[in-house]
Image (tube, rainbow, N blue to C red; front, side):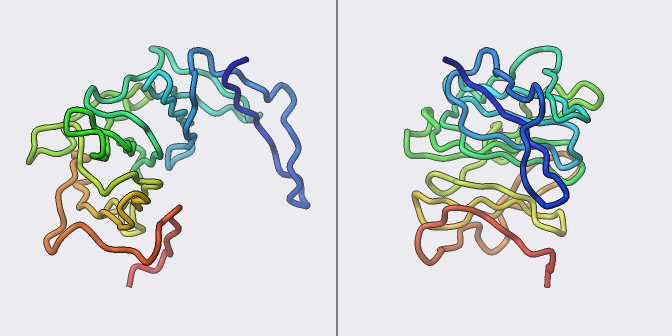
Length: 202
């Protein structure tokens, strides 16, 4: 009957209790694939593969959501199959992984970059990969997660389709990504399904 998000709070024993009124339809969404928040906790993002767009909400103190003005932001024209998201530590940029890039071939997976407008939260595509003059940066096949490392210098994705990790150098002033100096692909043992990183950067 529609796409709905449910809000819960945790009591002192860690038990989850549904927030009153916390059943919120995402109007316009048809196939939600992922939800996540900005690093500063200001915004919640909903990736919808049905419309190939991103819905942005502010988070109320009671756990309820309010849609920002301007509506949903479209995915990059040459990307589809959104799988995960992350912002940089300053919540200036949003990075979204996609399992397909039709203009490059259906099997090509990419990261898409957005500027986050201060104060309003609206998203706008930017030139994520200056070397290729495009809003996308290539990854291994079917990325399942994406994150910024604790030193705030690099972005990584874990790629289930190719059983590897993609790394990229992050330029914090522009949000752009470039390949690592000694190669950006790292083979995994088995098929990755998620990411978890340590705060220890040694």
